[in-house]
Image 1 (tube, rainbow, N blue to C red):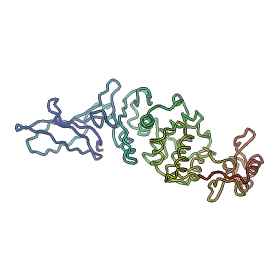
Image 2: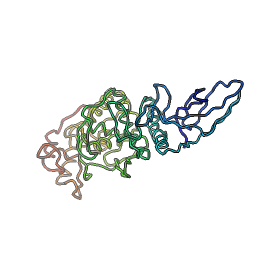
Image 3: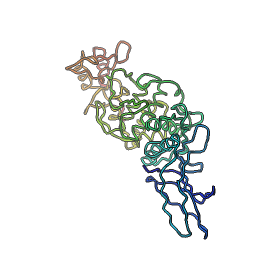
Image 4: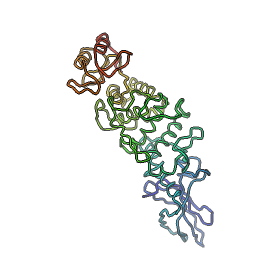
Length: 391
C-alpha cells in the first residue's frame, strides 16, 4: 500500500540535498541542485510528516525521540537537468521497524486519524507522538504521548482510540479532571471518565464509518446494538459505552429504536474543538446552546431521542411523547395516553402492550424501575398542562 504523508529526504553521504513529503498516493516531487559532475543519492523515509516542529504525527522507539526510518535499497545516479523517477518499497528486515511504519500509516495508523479530521473539518491537529512498542495501550497525559504495545500495529481501532485522547487533550489545552484510572465499558464509572473514554471509543467508529469496535485479542464491541433493555449494560451518562453509543447514534445513518437522526462528524467536532466539555451532559448543553442561538445543524428533539436510545435521558419531566414520536416540550393528553396504554408492562416481559422506556419515568426511589405503573402515570398526569421552552 502507498506510504502516504511521510517525510522524505534525498541524501548523499549524509548530506541532505532536498526534502519533502509523500502525498496521499505515496508520491513525491523534490527539486535538488545537481552539480556538473552529477550526484549519487539515496532516498530516506521516516515515520513522521515533517522534520520540523509542525509535524502531524510521529512514531518513535521506546528509547529515542527520533523517528523510525528506511531507505531505498539502491543508490541513484542523477545528472544535471535530469528528472529521475525513484521507486521505493519498504525492505527493512526488522519486524518492529516494519510494524512501526504500519502504526504510522494513513491506511491503518495514526495518519488515518489525522487525515480524517483534516479532510472532514479542516482542523489540523499537530504534534501527536506515539512510542512503539512500549507497555500499554495508554495515553500519557503528563508527556502528551501515545503508548502502543507491539500488537497494536494490527489493531487500528486501538491506535485511533489513543490518538483520540491526544486530540481531546490538544484541543482542550488540558486533560479533563477525574478521567484516569480503571473503568469498564458497560458499567458505571463517573461522568468525566465516561465522556473522555466514550469519545475515544467513538472516534475510530467515525473514521471507519462502522459501529463495531475491534480490540485485542480478536474481541469486538458493537456500539450500534445496545439499548435500554440490553443485558449486562448499565444505564446513563456515567457509562463509557453509553456515551460512545450516543455519539455514534448522532453520527450514523442507521435508524434503530428511538434513534432516527443522521448527522455525521462535523457538528460533534465543532463542539469538541470550540467548547471544552468534560462530561456528556456539558456536551449536550453546548449542543442546545447552539440550537437556541439558531446555528444550523443542531436540532434538539430528534437528537434527544438519539441519545435516549442509549439510556441517556435528558427529556423534560413528563414530556415522553409528541407528534412523530418526538418530545414536543409540553405535557398533554399524548403523554398521559402513552403512559396509560403501557400500564402494567415490565422490561423484558413480552407484550402486548410492549414496555416502552419513555413512559418509565419514576419508581419507589424516584428513578425508573423497569416497569410502568401508577407511579409513572401519576407523575405525568400531575404535570399535565406544563409547557417548556421549545429550544
